[in-house]
Length: 536
Figure (cartoon, rainbow, N blue to C red):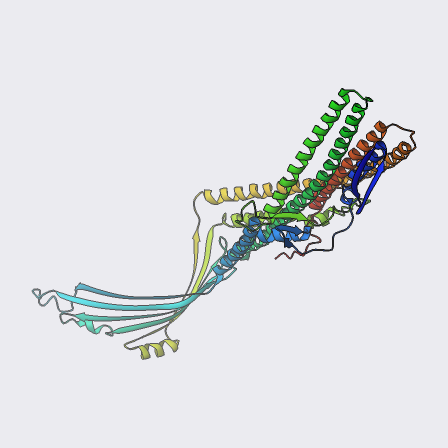
């Protein structure tokens, strides 16, 4: 007779029974210590807010995801990259800003004067010199339009004063000083190369596409972080469940060893049975130690993902999941149409943007194959007098003007640079199309395999669950038969081992189901659904 004191399901009892019956009940209670988490997962615990208590950080899956998104360096890099793309778009649009310009200069020239009107009458006359002072000012505004048109509106003022060291009739030929003012409007329109809207807005369109692409890149990075956190969170939760199962198996092995030792003492078994039982305990201890190591490793992985940047890996606290294992669906999620999947996949959207940018690059390169043919036109109102007021008044009378129209043609012989840029653009476009097609097939395959994996996982889990239920029923029958003396203890121990293995297999299949669900959600582009995440 053995007196046992044990606790089971919240109730505490002390009883005396036969060693066989008590051992069966005790080991059954040890198995029952594998918490309800080891059974069919269902629901979420009500607490959702991270709570620091005794250096243990209890987090839900949503808490872990949001903490990781706030602290993950890759997400911060993508946020910065989005701002960089915004700045690049502004830089491209800045090409069409108004530009003001001012230019002022002073110049003095001293030169010999030749050809005086009376120089033939006095050949020995000394040489005459003329000093000319020239002050000019130019200011205006210009702008480039998206058609390639360059318009310029400017005001020019130039004052010329001449001082001669000797008498010359030439000094009476013009006003001195002389002020010339010119109000000018000039337009240049490229007709072929560098002309029209398709070419001149190409940089802006590429920048806009890159801006959208950076947001898709940010979504892709967030999706990757969420996927990593989900996998780490549930791997940690499964590791805890696995450790509980291994502890239960270790309890069974130790109980069996105690029973075998008692049987050897009573002469019912030989010493070899003790060695076998000790081997089973050693193997169970090894598995339990490995399970504990897995718990520590998965806890560290989750903690590294959610802790602030720069924090030490040790963290100074432990992370504990507060949610039960994810629920088991009876049927796989319908994947829907591939067009819907493509619209939810940021990597596919990014690939489409690459194709668009490659097409725009072809338009740019084709434009540079054309000759440079510019149409230029200008109109100027001119005023000339000795002082500014008179010159300005003369300018606005419109009696003195100048207009000009010209065509300028330029073409590089061979034009090899432009031709090779065009060839390069064509190959890059073809390459982007091939990548998009390959990604389309890859996504289709991922969705198909993901849906099949989930369906298979559901069937395997259902089989493992039925096996566990049958193992529990068999153990109950063997326990009843043992109480009636109709079976041997060895059959009870065998049933208990089968139940422990069945529970471990059910847990493993639940883990495989969860992995399959993550892969399917990733393939469908629905990873972020269910989280309060707002993307730019």
